[in-house]
Image 1 (cartoon, rainbow, N blue to C red):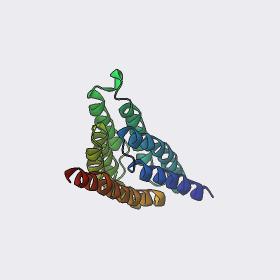
Image 2: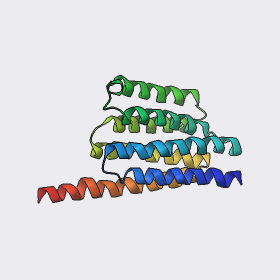
Image 3: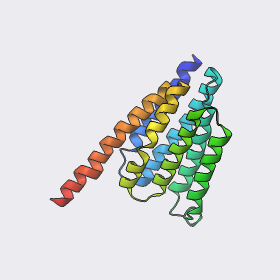
Image 4: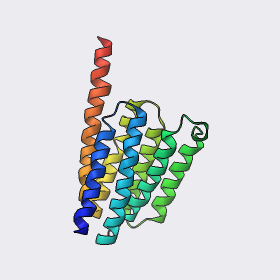
Length: 179
């Protein structure tokens, strides 16, 4: 029963991830990512407890992602504008990867987090989508290895959502503007 609940929490996170990239405003993209990060923290902790898998790297990196998103969604406020936040979250992602290192695939979540951190720092939604995209294959491989069914589905959903959003907002809208 715990396994079903664990995967269910992850699937809810997958839904929020999908919805995030269908938003046309940066604040909405990041807002949905905050909810998804909360769910994935719970998912990976439960996955680590129930399966004994190296899922704690995923939980740690999602906690960093949650913190990052809270700061970045507030970057219109003076305390959150400093580029030192960007540097801090990149360094923390690397340190978390080193501290939770289990095997060769442990570098994938930190790499994904660094890409996403850089993308969320951007103000341009197109850049957010394009720079975020390569993080999904990193998480996909990690999720396959750690047995996160919800994580595997999430990354397939996220890649699909990003492709849809890129076509919808970045390709088709630009074509309409040119005409």
